[in-house]
Image (tube, rainbow, N blue to C red; front, side, top):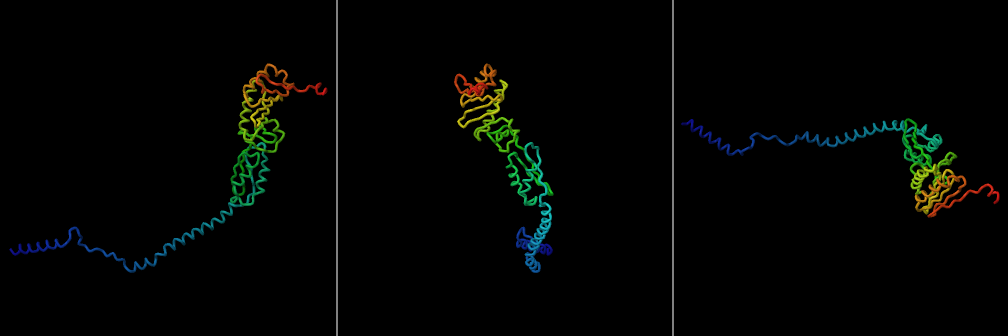
Length: 283
């Protein structure tokens, strides 16, 4: 009896103890969140050391780069000793162009203005396009594309295959090129008409050697047999077809005597004949 009573009392005490303890709470002691004073003091003293070490490392790194930069720059920026012009050319004087570029070089190879040199080279009338590259240690290489003339323009100009005018010093060899003329903004139209006319006159075995396009829109051409044909500005194809028919039937046999043919008339042509020797003497 006493044993059971004792157990009952103990059991009741335990129940009371459980009631006093919140459910889900641990009975273990929580660790203290307070940092030891020595560690806190050390951290407060070291807060400025890390940025200082970082800054010191950056300064040392920059100093190392600078010590390497100076000798490398000095090696790369040596004075230019040779200017070399490369590219297939027929009319351009390569040595003269190289000397002209070299005469204006005052900086080292690395410091020179590549774009300025390219503009200088392109300003030459015979240079269509150019590229400039550094060739270390002391060479400047200029790669050129030369203009290709396909016709003369006016008295002193030349045309390339895209109808662009350039103005080199004219030589005797260009005299054999066809001569085109007109307003500068009409070069493409004149070249296209020149091509079409040559296709047309091939039927009579002739070639157009000169073509002029006047501001008011009138065309005049010269054939390789020196006959000048005044076409005008309207009904151009119809007038030319009439001329080709008349030339084949009548004029070809007397071509050497003809100086000019005016085909601006609606139903015919006007022919100007060359003066004969006896006529010149009589005058």
